[in-house]
Length: 211
Ligand SMILES: C[S@@+](CC[C@H](N)C(=O)[O-])C[C@H]1O[C@@H](n2cnc3c(N)ncnc32)[C@H](O)[C@@H]1O
Image (cartoon, rainbow, N blue to C red; front, side, top):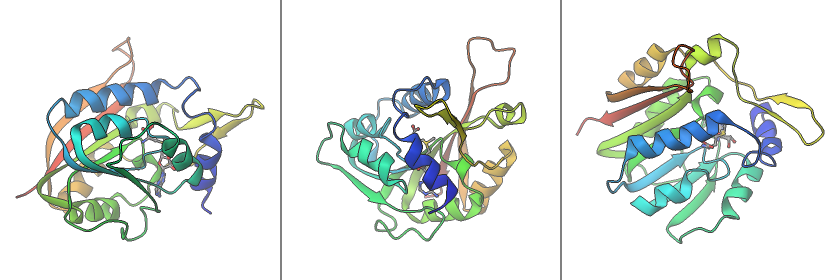
């Protein structure tokens, strides 16, 4: 098991209950960015404990929620879920064989891509799983926040601080990886805490596959 998967399994115990401003702001950002319109068939990558899964399902014809952490998936499955949500346990750094290609209108990545070294591979897979005209939503800890020392971390019940392994991706790297996969950037927003003179906490991007 990778160090990231092991840390995610451990994090699952506290993920929904620890104080976590990034988790909460991303939930708000995804809801505002994707709005009230129907979402069609959704592939949610790195669903974790299902923070966004039920909300997506309320607007979707189906949601396939994917994660490589068995403990994160167990927390998500334990929530009250409509029947059109299904789950798959898979490592997205390997070829995606967990769903039919070309079947989705929207692929979402919420707080996942900082754990992925090779963005180009993941974007190339995501595009193959999208229908023409489909969208990719990315909600990430803003790289500016990484530059000043923030990263995914949590405190265990025993008071131990665990840092989850991350990779640093500059804003331009997201764009370049998406561009290489044939995607067009259609929306970019930065999300701040109350004090907008400090670095933004989140970066959100929406890309569209050419029809
Ligand atoms: C910070 S959590 C975010 C969970 C959820 N999307 C949210 O916004 O609350 C990151 C999630 O990505 C998953 N993840 C990280 N690397 C992954 C990989 N290579 N394949 C599949 N899932 C991965 C972790 O297991 C974890 O559940």
